[in-house]
Length: 482
Image 1: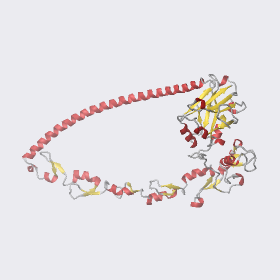
Image 2: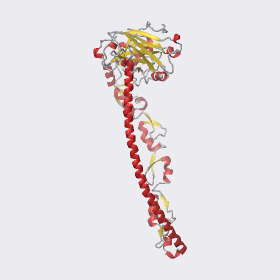
Image 3: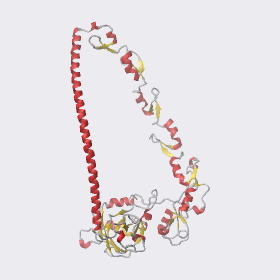
Image 4: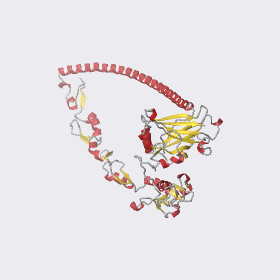
């Protein structure tokens, strides 16, 4: 098929349910980080008691039905198993070969409720003897706290053990366990106990004045101030501090020269105290002034933050209004510039952003409101190989005066951004709206989850090898005529 020129091609457009088409359980991603297909989770391989009846087993994986779906021909399968079968073996029921497409599958909620109510043993019953038994729906919650499940040491020593062994390990074997100090009873990591003892307040120590007394470290200050026979006390005459033993000999041991030195020291000390008091007073003044400045700064900051928030809100409203006006005056031709294409593509491959939506636009000033949706890693049959592109109707300001369903011709194009105008070859497809489809009915939600377009709009290789990506951006154009 040739996609080199704009205009209709022979590819068929189809209606696509945006919600159903992308609703895959978060724990079951079907694209790995490198973009290749990853094996989807199969049925429940649990120890059922009593054993499952065959009608609750998936005919493909032969395990308990997980997210069961039913086919029009009456067979039940795991959702992921039948999807994989249809994609790998063809659109048919693997039991009776009846023609079957993914769109014909429907969720069997009754079977799911039955499955989740069946009794199972813990997965570690045989291996480690866990005795838990309960409903399947309770199994995952049990496993989060199963005493036989492996877990890491909470003290981060690197050991791995069964959850029920954690307390014993932490009490007896963990190198990072806490033990009480023999002196102060404070709990200390066993590897740091020696360091703790060097400063433990209840550890015995000698008097620093070498009086020969032994006491706990926390009692040293009180001993030196009150009881130590070698403590310093002031002289009754010159106020010089000497040891208590010296003081008992009386003032005669102080020479006149020493007395003069003491008086000079006291005079200088008094002067220094006055200066300290003066500096302290000035310090109080400075602290008060600093507190005043801090309050002013906080007031200015609060006022600025409030003003910035108001301006940011106004700017966002203006930007939204600008986008809305651009969408209103496009007159049926809208070009969507998708920036950061490579990052968006990687996000789609990793399953972070399954779909990207364009800004909304109108077919005319008072017309229908729409948007484009692009799946950069494809969906369904185009998964991993094609870009998927759809149009979605949106709730607009003028829906009440418009005719419904929408009728018209829509041309979707990915534009060639080659510098040479003559060599540009856009990739284009033209579709005609079908009034009987839900995709073109008046929307009952802000954006109709039913879209219409192409699961395989263009091969990803064609997009990346040509000139369709420039400055890490692509241009998607939609042209609407009624």
